[in-house]
Figure 1 (cartoon, rainbow, N blue to C red):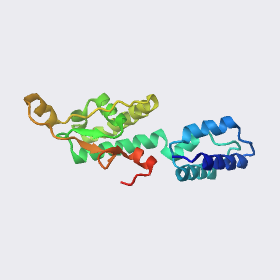
Figure 2 (tube, rainbow, N blue to C red):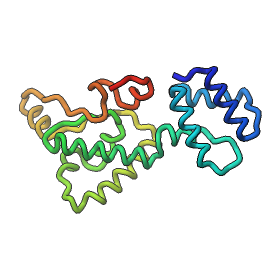
Figure 3 (cartoon, rainbow, N blue to C red):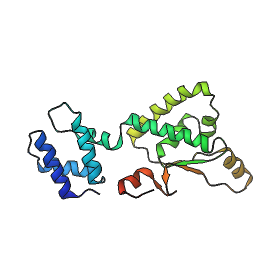
Amino acid sequence: MLNKERFASIMVGLCDIYGIVPSEFILDTYYAIFKDYDNKSLENAINKCIKGRVYNNIPKPAEILEYLEGTKDDKALIAWLQLKEAVVKGGYYASIEFADPIISNCVNELGGWVWFCNQPKDELPFVEKRFMDLYRLFLKRGVTDNQRLIGFIEAQNSNKGYDIPEPIRIGFVNDTLPKKICENTNEKA
């Protein structure tokens, strides 16, 4: 968590670079946005942001957030890679649970897990494009409803009353917390 005194020092320095006096509003607003990040991460993001910046005004929070979290395109690509990892680990037969709820929502919107796993290789570039577009849209909308992707075994077993195997979990650390939460709390995997 961000130390408020250290944060104020960082912001005063940042404002000094751009020749402005930080107002209480600026400090409170930026603190509210960045309070869940640690000092080191914020300092690194600000340093990277101002290093390549050519504008003569203070970086907006969205610019700094891109250095902390990546762009929407970065996040969509990471999600696509996690989806491909799930296909390799479990494929058509296994049920999958992602730490990122947007991934499962995108797959269900596309046609579901079994449909996704059955896509021919020559169709994957088109599926990837649609997935990336959906991911950016759902990210903008703030989708948080996490849905488990049902595999063939779970679908068949639940119809016949048999035991349902545990889903394969992708993007979780220690099988409990999503990676992003652990990174923000400095918990080691």
